[in-house]
Image (cartoon, rainbow, N blue to C red; front, side):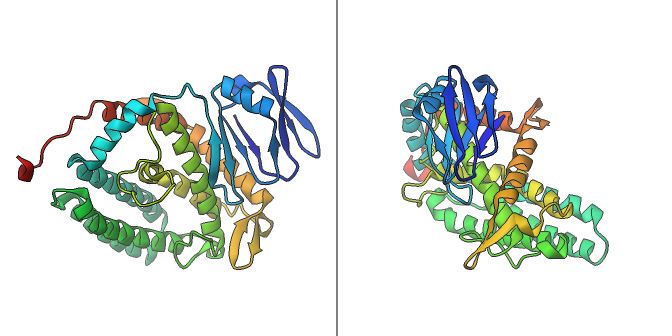
Length: 334
């Protein structure tokens, strides 16, 4: 269960060994052993006793902005052995193997996008089916370029990889827009801020995912600020921007389903100047839909776990990978 405090005046306090969620309408008592995370939005409050109860039960406490993007968090000092892993992260950061790791990340992202488009192609009729097929072929070309790219160091190849990744993503979202009902169609990705309903939902879902990925990395003892592909974001959790590429497709799928079902009404959104934002009802629908999807049991790498548990398991695997990392010399360095 996830506690979401995103309405003005909502509060969370401790009463003996339980959480008490307070809203204008009612109070609810919750057992902390059943809580996985707590998200506190603008205008909500959480007492220090409630924070300490969350720490006692190693519950993530995340403070988010109006778009769902994490701005700060509280976590237990028991999480991970960051200093040991951080040293190895730095070694890997500057090592020659970082390039192959990033190529694998970009390839996986494109593969995920292609897989989703293939499901849309099945449901489509000509000429959209043919258009999707042509788009998939173009994306496969970019993926193959990523696979065969030859370079010694990541810094030499990174601009090219970003260009191919961006081109594949533009084609992907172009086809998504052509597929969704007309009311949800969009001209392209708009992030800060969103300019349409689809991107407003997607940005909020991605904001949730950023927070969850940062949480699983911290729990595993991995430093989320030491990125490999995304290195240039000052004071930003750069590794989160790397790792999220593996999981963005989950939010894409949730938002796509909400559009297909036409689950969002005009009252789910609002305008702030030129920015399209989710309003209270829209936030509740997206939050519930994303959390339900992450709680669903799936088979991944031969194991049946919830998607959330798979993310945590894979974060621990990454921590183990960093700890066991031993750099090799490039041919030019031998």
